[in-house]
Image (tube, rainbow, N blue to C red; front, side, top):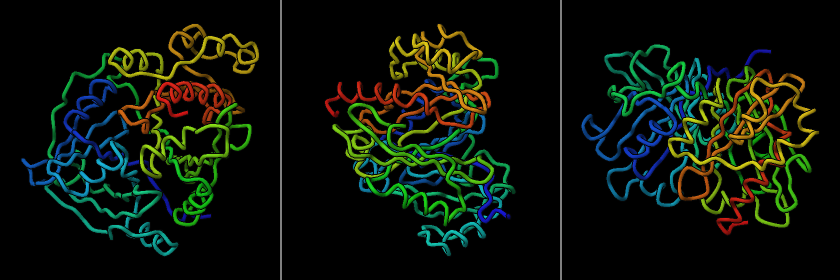
Length: 369
């Protein structure tokens, strides 16, 4: 069957932040990303500044208002720092937009062409959960650093001293949190509007602890280049991580971004030394004989994983290593995952209980459990 909504991959994750310059320095220093482009008052953007950073194919755009009362400023005041756009690169923006709108998507920006001396980019945008959008991008005829209107920029800090000069190379998946009862609606949205399929689902005991629970389904395009897990809270004894997110973000939105790395040990070491805080994993996780038997041999000694708090999971296709940061802003909303895959296409199902218990410990410290 032909793909009704072909995609080339993730184009960019766009954040609304309170101070874009300082956020750019944070992601440069702590995440090892390289500043590549800038837009602000100096080159025609009167109301906001935007810094574009890259690591491999992973691109973050950090947008901050420089005037009070703008739509961007109001968004940050209401929601705090967070993701406002999961931009997707497609081979044909006009066709993708037309198909999405015909299938019921809310069109936010009709297709248009932006040009400069580096060529042209075709863009459009449709709405998804909460105030998040998907900008559709065709940059096949463009050779500039990011988009027309953005000037090339020099890196803010020296690159990490790793083998290839970066800590991660791609966005693996982006997770959205939606309200109770809305997960299946958004799964159907992605099936109908973008032709995505339900890649995995986790319900019931798969994704519950003694105190809290959630439900999750993963939608993905046919090539598995773009993967969007969708979470909703489940009825439980105490407040789940999804409930906490919805309360502090003020509605549905992007909960975390998973970043694919080829050397999770070196990446964690660099990020921790730069001040990034990760969730703690109890020693008992690594001492569990059932875990040892299930995961078998992996590339790193268990003691090295234990020292860093890195989780391991294995399925029929292989195994993965993963670790999660604490929220990267004062509100307990957006955080990041680092993931190193060795054949596995999963999302760490075997680690869910340990992960959620770690999150619950942080919620209890914040008084939100």
